[in-house]
Image (cartoon, rainbow, N blue to C red; front, side, top):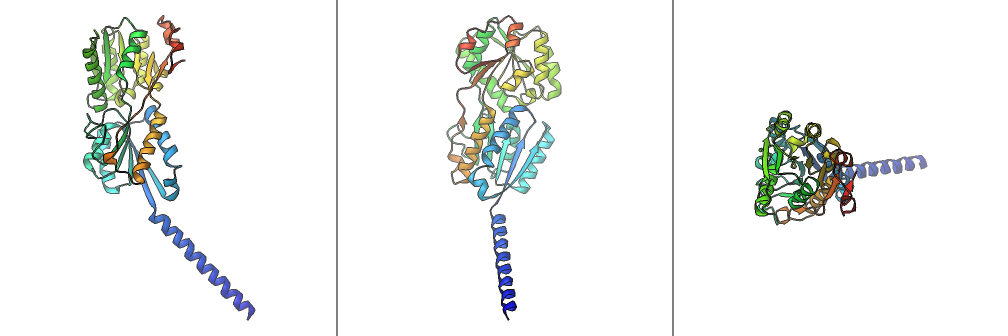
Amino acid sequence: MRNRVVLIILALILTISSAWYTYRYLQREQSSSQLSIVSIVEIQPIADLRQGFKEVFLSSDYAKKHQISVEELNAQGDPSLINQIADKLATTKPELVFVLGTPIAQAIQKRVPDLLLVQGAVTDPIEAGLANSWESSGKRYIATSDLPPIPKLINLIKELSPQVKRLGVIYNPGEPNSVAVIKRLRSYLEANKVDWQLVEAPVASTVEVPTAVESLVGRVDAIFMPPDNTAAAAMSVIGKVAREHKIPFYATNSSVLEHGALAVVSLDFVQLGRESAYLALEVLNGKDPAKMPIKLMENPTIYVNQKLASEYGIDLTNFQKQANTIVR
């Protein structure tokens, strides 16, 4: 009799345990959440943005309370893949898309406007048609911006390369982020009566970059690469040609410094990724993305390549004393 009672109690315990674990499993299933991280190309700033985003998002309270399924997609700069990714997201409809690259953000928003898009480091979402204003997107879209501070860039070039009269610019006219920066650069030069000529070298793909940069040799006094994914994928080619011909090369992210840039005005892209995650979590916890402002990052860091400066005969004594400036 006693053994029978023990067996009944054990059976009840197993039944209750099984029911409990089934309940917990169903709870996790009901609380599951899909995150899609979509990149237009693989370059260091995009890798940094992903790192910062995942660091914050996947360690958040939201992630602890939900079963997060992460999918990473990369278009590798291929327009046909951009459309395929947009079509895929239209089918899977994840709770959140962290998108890196303006053309792919545009494709997704056009194809699936009801998806929640968080863009890391958009340059000008208004120019790109992704948001209605800097104060509020008016859509299921939020973003951090890597809009470079044009005045600081111009002053940097003037100080390191006072001989500049013709500034070469390599960019893809199909990338709204680049177009927005070039427009602001041109407007600033005109408004402030800076006597420079912009010499444009447009490219439609990364394979066109070598020809474009070679075409600037002998025609420009310095080269500037805006935040352009197409050009950035071939930054080492630009840097190599610039260095061979002793043409000062300027850019807007610190990774270019290792590929022949003389100096850059750079934001911290890992931190931009973190800030993007904070915005995403605010929305997932109840905020309306349509009413949230685009987040601008302040106080960029100026990085100067000491070895190249020495090769070009540039004295960095004053630079080494400036705030937010790193000479290396």
